[in-house]
Image (tube, rainbow, N blue to C red; front, side, top):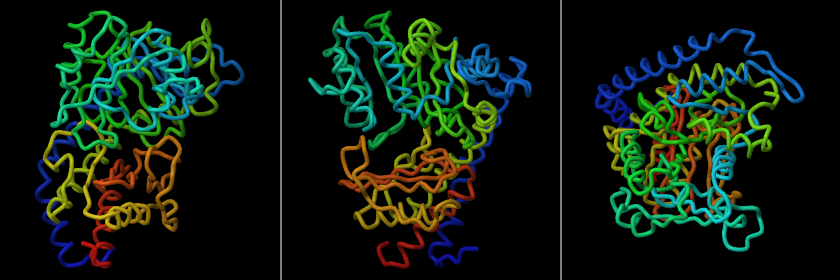
Length: 417
């Protein structure tokens, strides 16, 4: 048992008392999402033979085919594409975008600059990397307003007939703004469709799955993508991603993943099928545990004078808890303490480094069973002002508490708090 500084011990007890009603709300949401997931499994009569692997081309892999159907049902979509062959969330999103867009088309992000790793996917003139720009697809990024809302006047001013896909990012990424709720995303879709009913709406849903009782495809989003080593993998799926949405759009993404004319009909699951099914089953509970940890963390940080986003009692639509520190030393101490509280690689001390795909040095705490699994407790931060750390995940509420308390204790011990 950790021996807490008296001031910290009192603050922890007060934070849990304060957050108790919000924690109970999350428990009720967990129940609803768990029941919805079980009903999808039951609808398609999932049995143990669905967990068997396939080899080679993977023809007639009923486990794979049924998994696509179960995902579609859980997310209220027409079709799904769930594969271990997606290397990351960025790869999954890129596959969807390359499937939807053609030379001469325009992609418009209406929720501001996307997550750092997508900038290389969008590309720049003459980059020669095979980016969207290299293939003749232009991208317009419409900044958000100062209060983190879509700037509709700017969207309408930038609109033109070449806009084929309107993209949205649900989570905050490395931005100091609220995540967008499912209701807000539904409103965005409605307004975009007024500009052009035929435009395709695409959503980066990473970190958002099961944080509410509805999913964005249930309120009009045409197609969305996410990573299995985030929320829907439940901390069990070893790799992979998913795309769900309208049947034709998912089919186009499948053609990009494999080849035109082949699409989703092939692909050995490489022994991952059972873990992906089981991860989806566990996901509502695991996501709820992470959300409870984030609420506690925000309540504790706020009580000790830190600025957080979201605040402990704000609505949440993703896993990410942002905390603003006064100095780089505080930020680095926090991230290192999260690593130190891990069950895996607790002895490793993370340091800032120039990570591929990022525009500033980044420090990452990731003592996880699944490499990069951000449904597990992790934290990362670009080393740039304002000094902001982004904590996410936690398969158990107890683990999140330990990580946060360890960080506060270290700051007190080192007199940097």
